[in-house]
Each structure stands twice: as C-alpha cells, then as structure tokens.
Amino acid sequence: MNLDLLTVALLAGAANWAFRALPILARTDRLATVGWLERFLSATGPAAIATLFVAAVLPSLSLDLPRLLPLAAGTLAVLALWVLRRSVVLATLGGAVAHGLTVWLLG
Amino acid sequence: MRAALRIGAALTPTPRRASRARMTRTRPPFLDGLIASLPIAMGYFPIAFSFGVAATQAGFTGLEAFALSLLIYAGASQFLALALLSSGAPVLVSAFTLIAMNLRHVLYGPALMREAGAGQSKRHAWAWAWGLTDEVFGQALGALARGQRFSEGYMFGLGLGAYASWLSGTLVGAVAGGGALEGWPAVSAGLGFMLPALFLALLLSILSRRQLPVVAVAGAVTVAVTLAISATSGILLGMLAGAVAGLVRR
Image (cartoon, rainbow over all chains, first blue to last red; front, top):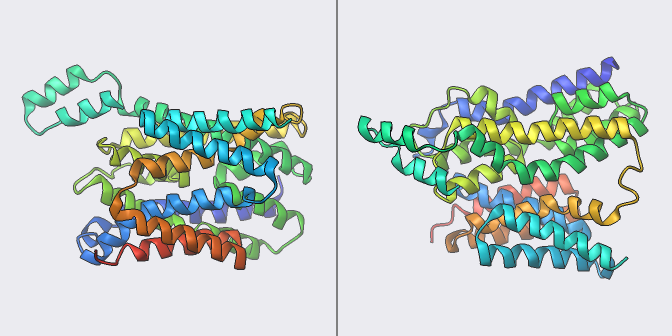
C-alpha cells in the first residue's frame, strides 16, 4: 500500500467526516431559530440540488446534436414522469432509460 | 413511501397510538432507506466502476483504489486524488485540495436537521452522517419534503445502500479494468445520466414557488462561475449564492 496515498486518503476522509457529521452533532438546531439563519438553511437544500443538476448537465450542453438530444430526451422524460406519477424513483429511472435509448437510436 | 407516511402519522406520543403504530408498521425505516437508495446506488455504481478502472490505469492497485473509496467516499475528490498522487504532488497540498473540494458538505447537516424539525434524535449521527453525500442529502431532503418523518434508521439504510454501491463499483471496476462497458455505449450513457436525472427529480419534488428565485440564482451563478473559473468553484459558489438569495424576504 502506497503510504502517501493512505495519508492523503485518511486526511481527506477525516475532513469529509468532520464536514458531514460535526455540524449535526453541534447544537445547530438552536441556531436555526434565528430568522436569517433559518431562511439560509431552508434555501440551502434547493440551492444545492439545483447547483448539482446544473453542474452535471453543463458539460453536455452544446450545439452537438448527438450530445444534446439524449440530454433533452432524458430531461423531458424526468419532467413528464414527475408530472404524471410524482415519483422520484420512476422519474429517475425513466430519464435514464430515455437518455440511453436516444443514444442507441442515434447509433 | 405511503406506508412510511402512514407510520409517521401514527407515531404520536400517546402509548396506545404508539403501540398501534408498531403493529401496523409494515417496513422498518432502515429498509425504507435502503429501498430509497436504489436510484442513488444505480447511479453510483457506474461512476465508481469508472473510478476503479481509472485508478488501475493510473498504476494503483485494486486495494489502493478500494482504500480511496472506503476512506474518502467523495467522487470528484477521488478522481482528483488519482491525478494529484500520480503526478507526484506533495501529500499536504493534495490533502488540502481534496478537503477544499468538499467544504460544501458543511451546510448539509444543519439544512437536513432544520427540515427534520426540532427534537429529532441525533444519537447516531456520528455514524450515519458519514454517508451524507450530495445525493443522499438530496434524497433525504426530498423524503422530508414529501412528508416522511425523520429517522436515523432511514438515514442508515439510505447511506448504506449508496456506500455499498460505491465500494462494490470501485472493486468491480478495479478488477474488470477498462473496456467492460465499451461494447454497450447506450447502457453506459443511460447509467451516466442516472445522477443528473435523480437531481432533477429531487429538485422537482422539493420545489415551491417561494424557492424559485433560489433555484434560478443557484443555477445562473453555477454556470457563470464554472465557465469563468472551474466546476468545483461553480458548485460551491452556486450553492452559497442560492442560499444567500433565500435570505431575501418576500
């Protein structure tokens, strides 16, 4: 086992754990009663998910049709299935199937 | 999910109702979480698989690839770790670069617990919070927005399903090597779209008229900063800008 790799992994992993766990273990629920902090935290979820979606699709946004069409088909399938069934699982799987099928059809 | 909602509604402080809730409970929260982790697990596997392949191609052993997934458990950071370590970057520089990439996770726990409501048990948070990745946070938040009650068992199930998929994908990728999905480009593309599809579905599930400006600001800043600086900065600043937009009283 490469010692440098193990050191980097342990340091990065320890920081990841601290970022994910410590703010929960600290009594942040008391702080959340502060008005502005409550609004900030309630906006964090939608902001994070919107950011991650945009970051995930941004590399595929181009005028190159073989890249754009599968993205459009997948996105539309997610939207349509969400409107019809209100199911996160179904919309996700349907979007992935539509994306894969479009890639297959485009050869 | 509907069963979980029924369970959640029945769990009130009165002993008789609590007892009835135990009787009518059809699925433990851990299992609910495990089932809810399925779309994440399906999205994680191919990414972890490609990480395993990339690690072995960069000259690391299967065990080292597995150790990175086991100890870091953050996709983009792990790919960057390969590049840094194989280029001979100093250990501390590599570690701090990876640490800076995941700073956004600081916001997830408080945002989740705020949505869960006051008085929720956090006794085992030191363990389940390890699994609080972007996708697990999104899925948990979506479940709460749809009316499900917070439960540490659910968080364990959700996190464990995703983590197991990440570790097994890395292992299979490291063992199989490159080319395993080369003959199946449509399958590979479909699996690659699983996470963007999940993010979009989660966004739709928690979207409200009040949060539309938050989403618009987050999206616009992500695009602008990604194009101007880097994808990592785009994610961090997009998220912060969206959350700050939420401060504006309407």
